[in-house]
Image 1 (tube, rainbow, N blue to C red):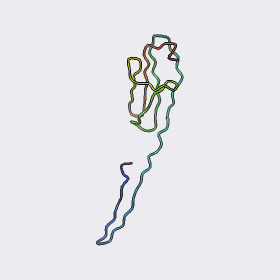
Image 2 (cartoon, one colour):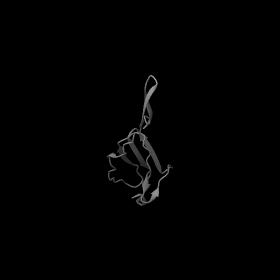
Image 3 (cartoon, rainbow, N blue to C red):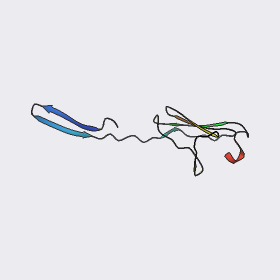
Image 4 (cartoon, helix red, strand yellow):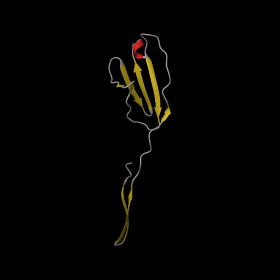
Length: 93
């Protein structure tokens, strides 16, 4: 995307111009989330892998957006995004 710009070719007093627009490839899941089971009080890690590193992700439980807290921790390393749920309870299912 950063290569998008106007490029020119000069020969003496004559110039030719072209505009290059680079369209970003869509981000896809290389590995989707997998179902997990856990005992109450334990910790669970949900992991997915994306096709593009550093892509921002939003974690949700149903329709509710999750935010980092003592309960939820988010990690992202390159193309791998992780959600860690601490002290799971039946309401976390």
